[in-house]
Image (cartoon, rainbow, N blue to C red; front, side):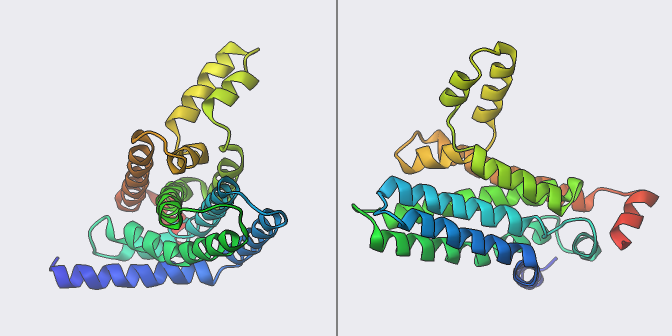
Length: 242
């Protein structure tokens, strides 16, 4: 496919992804939840850490709920399979479209809380971390939605955003009385792209944090592209046309 045609296809998918997010009720309700998070954080003079935690939480929630609609079974999935573009165009383009709707909300929340906060907030660093983590959360939720549906994928991402803030050391302490469960949970906590890793990166964590998040973002786009290109039988065809 010529480069100019690929660029046009990407632009079309970006606009389509943005429309899927802005025209659905669930992302708008998530934006109200983001407003409640900002109001709660602003109730007292927020510290830089409180501001960062609030912005990262808002980005994760909005990304998970917005991206759950991008290639979920139904018209969105069927439209992506009908294109003749390279495998990455639909998932990557729609992911960018969702981020166009999510990241400005994160920026407004960060600026508003920083104006009310106590202490200096590194806005550039915070937005860089929030952008990467929102991209990772959106990519993984988008990939999951192709297999489990939009509602289940959004719920899974929503729960991960809330309960994944505890670092592995805290999970190990909580589950100290159940060693088999403890080992599995701590292993998953270290492997999955949970928000504690983004928080540690913002606080000056190891270089492995952004690398791990970027790796999961790439995996999410690749799995989403594979789900669109793999052959389907009669059952899959029926689900597409539903």
